[in-house]
Image 1: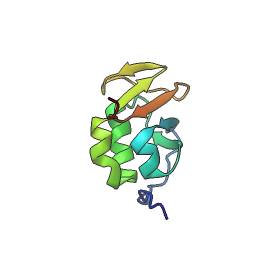
Image 2 (image 1 turned 180 degrees about the horizontal axis):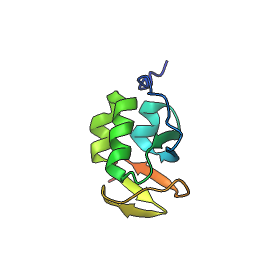
Image 3 (image 1 turned 90 degrees about the vertical axis):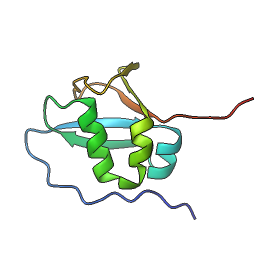
Image 4 (image 1 turned 180 degrees about the vertical axis):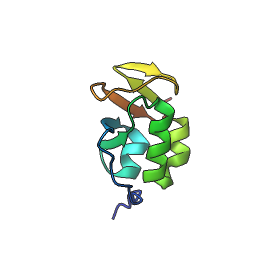
Amino acid sequence: MTQYAQPSAEAPIAKDCIRLKVRLFAGLREQIGRAVVEIDLEPGARAIDLRRRLAERFPAVEPLLKRSALAVADEFADDEVVLHPDQVLALIPPVSGGQ
């Protein structure tokens, strides 16, 4: 039986928050047990805020979140980029393997 990272309790959502959909890949998808998660953040939130909120919600994957690349609208982005609800977001952890 697969054990997934259990989410911690979320605080109630404020009316003025934005909802972001984040696609998860590889180890993050496997550990969380979902391909997509929805996260609510305040308007003007940056990528670093998204990482922090995900780490709060899924504490078991915090080390992997720190090493994962964030793609915003199909381009890699740094932690200072401001996020908007209409953007396509993806977190891609490091992968290894091959020959």
